Length: 358
Ligand code: SF4
Image 1: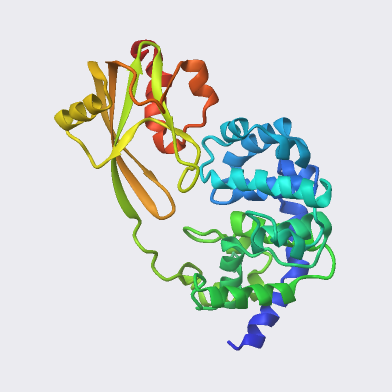
Image 2: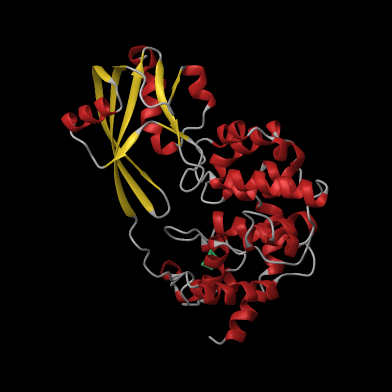
């Protein structure tokens, strides 16, 4: 198919898609009461995270920080705590940074154009498009993986959607295909179609799709082959030994550096590599601690976007104080500190067996 034929297919979409949306749209808290602030927070939370997981976080977040000003002024520790479990913590830090810019440069009023939104920390093309179209009815697309999938299938395109050049081609075509009115509804309809009908894994539900009569992939039966993506590189594996060091009712925590992965969050002390029990005992001694009782050893892992941590966790009662930059947290203090979900397995050991362990 030629470029023009691709464009014609996309141009046909808006009317049937909007009719479908009016009947089938998802009812989500950030859609019931629309503002740029609420759209923004929801879109940032939804990056890499399922809608059902986001909803309770969104509601707690809005209760704690109902306005941009509240978010700008928030205690970073409380912010991280509210984000705990959602992962990708730089999103939360960028939210606050951007809120501070909005307060300083725009007097707390959300910038109302795609171009200005793009200048804010953590706001890229997709999020700027989503806010500008949903909150300000600007005619700009919001193209993410879901939308690329729908567009590639509808046009039958075999361009690699992970290639930046191709993504730009799709984005331009989607921009041209947008209706003159109801731009926010159109972008949300595409998101819903991608999430509910033109599904990423397994068969899409073409018989429920408003685009079926003119969809190229459906006509050719090649839905499962599209979109084309080049193979992902394998994640880099890092091995770690993590220590859940207990001292009476307290557990050792230390703060991660201000920069890099999981910056500024709290963690259980750990070292690189997988240590056997005797090497682990030597490490504990190097921290100036004396093991009193070895309770449990567990293996667990955590996947980040580009890295996989494979970890062995030792849970033990110790005596001593350890390095000066550690804190010894009782249950209350620990709950106030944001410990990343990478260590959740160990945190759960305390939560579930607290009375035995502590
Ligand atoms: S008809 Fe099927 S493949 Fe085509 S856009 Fe709809 S759900 Fe996706």
